[in-house]
Image 1 (cartoon, rainbow, N blue to C red):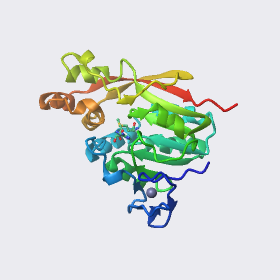
Image 2: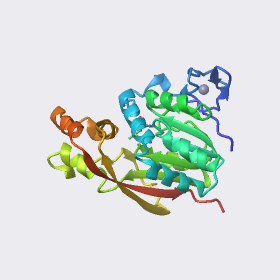
Image 3: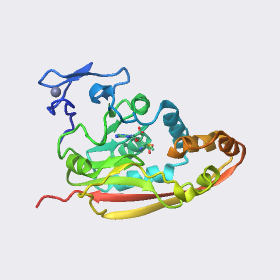
Image 4: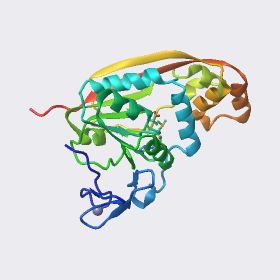
Length: 272
Ligand SMILES: C[S@@+](CC[C@H](N)C(=O)[O-])C[C@H]1O[C@@H](n2cnc3c(N)ncnc32)[C@H](O)[C@@H]1O
Ligand SMILES: [Zn+2]
């Protein structure tokens, strides 16, 4: 199925025009200068954080552009390539590096949503051929059965929504932190690092599927550049709980840090 956005107000398909998207009921969403569209009703979900801020998004890009997470980015692209998708959705896409690699490897069309406008703006600016929208992973703005492959990396997810937008036989590639992920960084930040987790918010419900396959991706980074150490810290949720003295320690001291993530592949059952 060719992907098209659904209206967040009435659920009807949105027709794309040069400057905006419109549904048959007359709801209209302007296309931003960078090409993305904001599909969050009211521009933002009330009572919910609006995702990563500009500085976190830029920190993430600095880390990716330095190649530090390439093994994970490549593993996601390889997993997605297995189904030779025509279209890939990255739900919680951030600044777009995972989707960019996955589309490069597969030749698929790229679709990305994130609740953070800063993230979507940065992604759309670098990847104008991809389709980006500000939207929530808890209410994906697409019809049922739209995508052959979906990516969800360190981001909130709702398995029933993910399953809904996947084609029968389609896969979701989900990346979550493993037990040793950034352990040495956590050891500097927390007196008792075990008490802290960077697990993304997950709406599991009763319909959480079993993964078809789980793979570990692990490697060690030697971070001699203070900019990269601070960027790595800033792109994690523990940035917020790092007191200034410990940030200074991280800025001043070269760091060897383990990256340890789990890549899980979920498949929507093919219809008989
Ligand atoms: C840790 S970042 C990961 C971003 C990207 N997947 C990556 O790995 O570079 C988490 C992302 O989830 C986004 N986010 C938070 N809540 C969300 C929601 N309800 N729907 C979609 N994205 C959300 C944040 O704005 C942020 O970009
Ligand atoms: Zn509408």
